[in-house]
Structure formats: structure tokens, C-alpha cells
Image 1 (cartoon, rainbow, N blue to C red):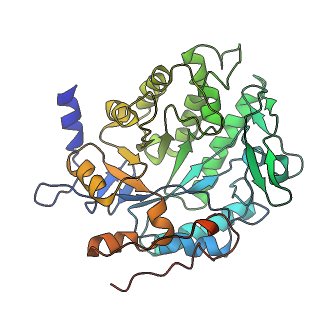
Image 2: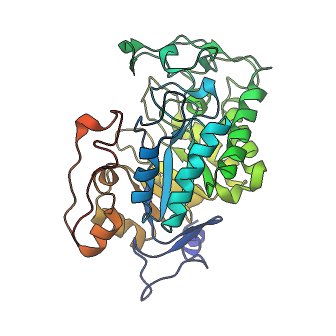
Length: 373
């Protein structure tokens, strides 16, 4: 109801300046204490070592951006099976946990807050980007149309996935639970379930990629079962108030199609709402059949992070008007490690170099200069 929505926006933990919230007003999301509402969105940048271990340049990169109210890490694989792109990090062995500990220590030393985005790509993978012995898995043995970059052989077709059996699914859910435990051991303040972009949870949700006939396929209630069980497992480690979820209903990225995304995501969010997650992170998608932001407001209006091409002015208005609790920014953070300070000072933003978005090393990653404010 409108009354409930209005009440939800005036949360007891919101400090306002002169009664008006803006992007620079602190906020608490679950157990996460944000010093402002400018969130750094998760961005794959392909700077991990070949063994999926975070590198020294990643420590620098995240430290430089710690003035964000919240940093959401790039997608981190919960298992070797969960890897799919080249040079992306995992959090399933001690070396990876230790590498992430160096990142979180650096962010915390700079006063920041950081959560780990747990990302299992499912069928969006090529074996050349995965360690020997790992598998490419999905709800059904349907190859996604598209290609993926490999360092060894350039662009390659996506793998044909192994369809997870009903007996294998609990082990995948356990991988997410263990990844959450490992993230906390590495010093992350929370975790975020990556539930969009055509990756494994979205593959289970969508009628096009999920053609199962058991309790994980067919009806909406069955298709939402896997992501809900993953969320429950993640929340079971140390409470739902340290767990967020990122969604983008009707996003066709990575060959995803769903017959009725409105119905699918209403079912997902209705059940997820009972968990009491720290936040819901929604990517708006104006070309889609669902008003994603309005859907998020219905189920999580007082803990809603909006994303996708918000200008500073639009984000300010959305927070001041109570439409969003916070706004996440991706591209502006690439070339502006001091994005928060630049916006506070009214300074111009730097452009970033598209050609070095995914190249190894510090160039176009951790070597963007701060403004002389």
C-alpha cells in the first residue's frame, strides 16, 4: 500500500539533513553501515591471476574506491565449476580467501564497506577459462547462443552444459553457502547473490533455459526454488541482514528468455521478502516487459538499490524522493577512483578507456588519477 511504502521510507536509521535525504546521507542496510548512498556496482574487470586468486592491482583498485558508501565486488565464483570468463576470481580455496583478505583489509583501512558478489555463471562458460577437471553446468543441457573470449584462442562458442541432476543440486547450493562462509573469513561485510545476466540462478528462473520436469522446473514455484534455496543457504551462515540480491527481470543477456518475467520475479521476491535481506539491487531495463524499479519498490522499498545509467542529478532526485534508498554506479567508478569526492566538490568526471576494461595489469584499472580538488 502507499501508506506502507511511505512509512517504509522513513526508516529509523536514516539521518536526514534538514529533513531531506540525498546521496551523501548515511544509511544502514541490514547490518551494513553505509557512510553515503553512492554504491560501487559490481564490474568484471578480469585482473585476477590464472588461478582465480586476487592480485596486488586488485587491492589497489578497491582501496582507491573505498569512499563509496558500499563497494559490491566483481562477481566471484563459489566453485571451479562457477568460473566461465578469463581471469575472474574465485573464493573456494585458501589462496583465494587470503587474496580477498588483502582487498577487504585495504578497503576497511580506508573506511570503506565491501560485500562479495557471488557469481556462478552456469552455462555461460568455455572450458579454456576453467581449471582442468571442472564442469560447465546448467539446469538443462541447452547451450547458450553466443561467444566468449579466451586468452588462448580468442572468441569461442559457449560450452554445451551438463544438466545438473536432482542429486547434484544440493552440492551446488552448498558451494554458495561455503562461499559465503569463506567471504566472511576473508573479511567481507556481506554477500550479494548475482541473480541476473543469464547466470546460473537466472538460468533456473527462466522458462527458456530451464526445461526440467522435476521440482526445479516447470511451474513458477519450481523455477524459483533454486535461487530461494541458495539465498536461504547464504542467509544461514550469519543472518539475512548480511545478504543482498541483484536482479534484472526480462534481461535477455546471455541468451536468456522467460515466458512471463513479471510472474516469475513476483514469485521470487514475495518469498525472498520473508527472509529480510539486507537489500535488493535492481537493474532497471526500460526495454523490458517489467517495470523493474516499481517491482523492487513493491517488495523492498526501504532497502532498494537502483542501477543502470543514473546521472548524479537523477540519482539525487530518486533518493530525495524516496524512490530508491541508494544508487549504484559502474562506469563512472572506472575512471574516477574519487567519484564521491568529485561529486561532493561539483568537479568534472574523467572519461575511461574502453580498450583497457578487461586487459591484464594496472593500465586502465588502478592507474586512473584522482582529481586535484
